[in-house]
Length: 286
Image 1 (tube, rainbow, N blue to C red):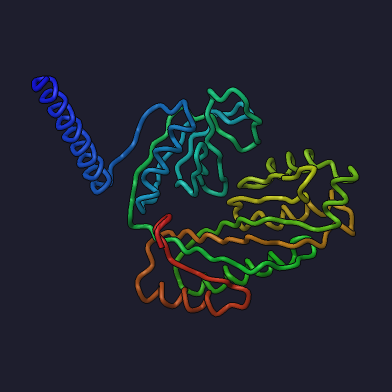
Image 2 (spheres, rainbow, N blue to C red):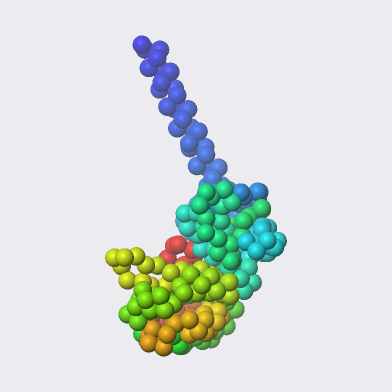
């Protein structure tokens, strides 16, 4: 009995040593700005890797080699804009690709999705991003929303640091819901066209018990006018007055702003009417 107990205690001690060593190795790798390279056949695994580093305050740059849903080969460099449980938003130039898993049993591919053959990620802590949250606003089409985003972009530009800007928001309106419910809007055609023509992700959300609304995630701000023209083409005139809410603007800088530049940009953005808050962050950390 005593020998069994001793063996169990020894096993526990070894487990603790293994876990401690693993944590230590992971810590050293993160702090060494480690690289990830390899075949990624599972979008969920790739997203797990991205989430691991991003939750610890790191951004990720790298390259993606994969097959686009239209059959073409994608070979681009860029950075991870966002990541979720099983999805990576990978920004490359003016495009935002969604990395998905080829082994998913049920999948509804969107035009910008890429099945990755190889993903290369480099973690880097020296990238500051500005997150701006805006008050809900009523907008005719997207005119008022575009004006507000352009206002934010204008004051960010005055800081003198090159940047790219991405927008996420939701759209809801009584006329919009009625038009969708009455089949006046071919919503899935609309969804397909927007995802084909614009960056980021555009989704229709609705059920029998909840109002219909539209979701835009991580769209390059330069595509908002294109989105507006598509919405105006498909939506009846009385359905174009909509409430934009959960508006989040993410500013990705080409280089880390200096302390003085950050202070000037923060003050200018925070003073804008309709800005709920603005904060500099390194990925998830404020």
